[in-house]
Image 1 (tube, one colour):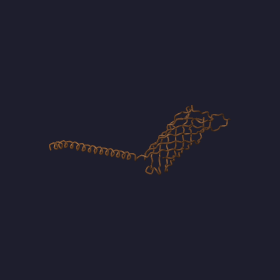
Image 2 (cartoon, one colour):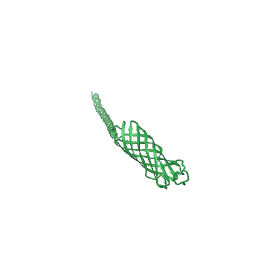
Image 3 (cartoon, one colour):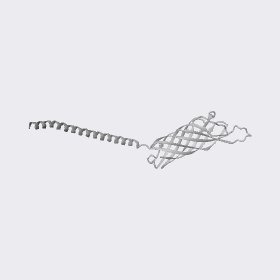
Image 4 (tube, helix red, strand yellow):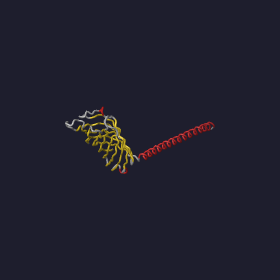
Length: 231
């Protein structure tokens, strides 16, 4: 009997230890589960907040081709300017809703026509056509008056600054080469745009603030029309 009681007394502390261990283990698992659920809830709340912040923005990518009418305002009596067509193509990233901004890249093939008036009177005067190819970076800000229906129909006004870098001059009878033109020009642009579903139509005016020729006053201007697609 004494031996049985001693064994029973020996088992009791062991049972207490085992029960305490399982109790602490169960509590730790419960706390871990609560922490995990709390982390998941916080992540969901952060994602929802991020989505709420993004509701005010409309992101679009635009690609376009366009035609232009090009003019070169040359001072003096050496040349007479004529308006002739050229072309351009480019792409842009647009972000915003009522107020929006846009940045992109544009290849511009501006074609000019000049008549050389310095030739002798008995010489036949003919028009000489030449082109200047440049890469521009249009930086645009605008207002979308129909932002609420942007995905279906939109009406926009915009202005742009376009730093441009000349990369080549087309062959011509005037002997104009790349070394005779300014490599850099800054264009100001203003226009109107219409979006119809995935189509984009824009029209406006570009004006160069720097002379095309290094040694002559020669400000360029373009009337342009763009047709593009957005996605």
